Length: 276
Image (cartoon, rainbow, N blue to C red):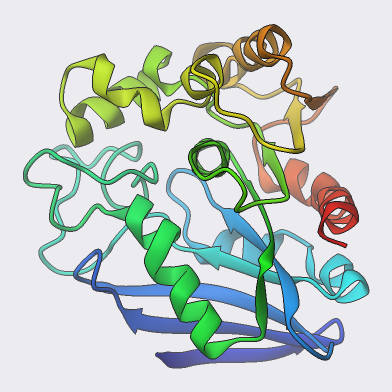
């Protein structure tokens, strides 16, 4: 573990750390905001979207004041392994490979060795946080944006009891049915969609998975709304399954961090209520 940056902000410390990951076989970086508060603190995870790293939300998310107010630790991991020798999209496309790990454990070559973001987030990184920071892993929440919203939903649905609350901004809710997801899941996991179910929030809910509290916000002016995000599928699945969902559609907002930064503090207020 190596701290590579540290800034004083909003009554706390914003830090960036690097460590060697056994899961991905690469160095990995994450950012963490540590409020000035005594004792183990509840933790909110934030998973970022396509092309992003920990830096996007750390620099643009406007979350620190809310975290300081509630005493929340805020952790933003990277979106994929990186480094020399890590395979990327053959044509350099933005929606697969580096910066686009889709929070899966890949099974297909040449991606299976490094693209193990599921195991990294379900096991390795939480253990490191518990060893080095005052986190209370009995009080966890998770949120994310776009591909990271997909990651937040599926990570929580697969791990009942780990998160007290789950939220997302413009999430990819049915990757088995949209071009982004079909490309990524096909190349990481193989061509048979039957093997994609544990990485598809709608299919997980239809299969019986549940979370205790769920909140989704979506911009009505999002250019990806109809073709990639399809929130109506999540709404239908939750209604049919009896899964409570707080859903907000906001006129004029798009897919950018102008949208996320407008509502992220409200999500943190909501998570704080559930985290106690």
